[in-house]
Length: 191
Image (cartoon, rainbow, N blue to C red; front, side, top):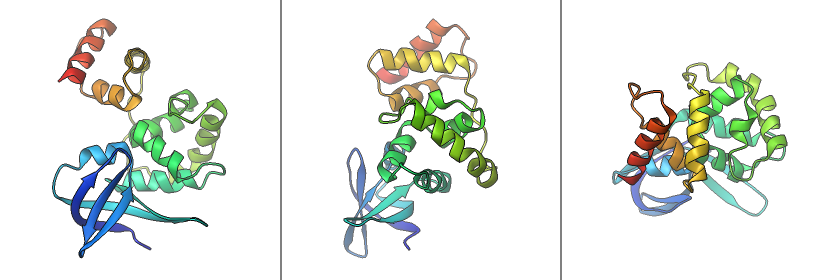
């Protein structure tokens, strides 16, 4: 089993990387968040090799927490690796953990390809796994204003990932006024 990969980054695409190790180029499928974090020539990834009847795919993650969430999600009946990567591309590990522990499937249903029933199933299936296996991860603060901001930014045409990044860039000392927080988020998106 390939559990980590270290090598030179050859190329990045929207859904995968190519990393050379010992002169061999290896395609590594990865969440958008992992791909965006990689900005140097030398990379280190936590990986999971997934064997299917018709394919052999290597998935890479920037953190051990992302790989643990990936492993937990693909064990849920009806959810494969591509949907697990979509979840990690849309929600941070902290936000997913918060949604599961606070029984908020509506947060997970924001992931493209996941409806309300699937989101509820994910929350139900992960509750025991997340509390038992990932206690070292901090609980993300998911409040009503973040949900309003996310809805407003996605309503303006930004992707969920872009909107979440903009919301996370809002300084903690920013005013609580929603309009002001939207303005600050839009400024970070245009930078």
